[in-house]
Length: 281
Ligand code: GUN
Image (tube, rainbow, N blue to C red; front, top):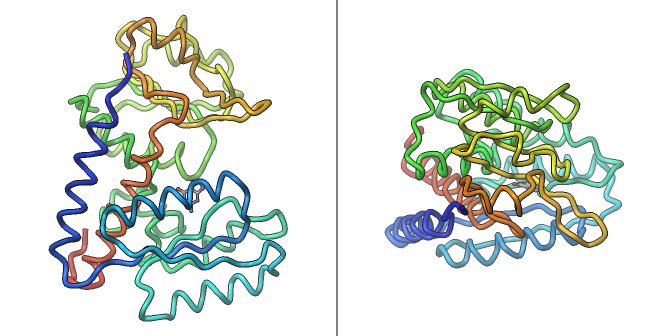
């Protein structure tokens, strides 16, 4: 059974749209793009389309793929110091010659609507709501809320290995009093950690890592990560069989990408309120 993410998404977008209509000036979402790979371009197009739909301005700073790291850092520092840029994101991944960690350390945490800077990541760890939470963990929380699941007392298994989904979602669910088991693609006998789970979150990028025989019949499966093999999108969960069984699962083939972008709009609005109205969280 597919989770009706469209319903959640459209209600979030109409709320954001309405709030933006009531503002004195339209927020601008700035995106810095260095590597024009097809996936990033597709993501950016969606961000532009949905930002415009919500009534925001969208602005793209495109840099050359071969830009030296030092020059990129200088550009980000200009964004940090520019009073006309209140928030922005740096589209990932970056070309190989650039140290992504160094770039994330350069982003001003108050302007970091992606929630990727060390300060914002740290705030999630210490249960501090004044920062920005990365968009994918945010939508996972929205789906759990929509399904009316109280994380307290729940067993939740998170499989992955990323700083932007796996670790923050584990921390957010711990903050919400769930009992969280954290696995990765090298965990021995993953089944022993998924078979008793009420919710399984897959963010490992390993096709068919989770199969029907590894879960209970009332498990909620949230599948976040896909891999492209021979032009085919393959997800971590064996969707065909799990969906047939009636377990609640996020849909394929394209996942819930508009929900990720909705969370970016939500963070941008939060940044607007922090910068213009002085609201802290
Ligand atoms: N690349 C893939 N997803 C994201 C995202 O949410 N933010 C940024 N900045 N880059 C990405």
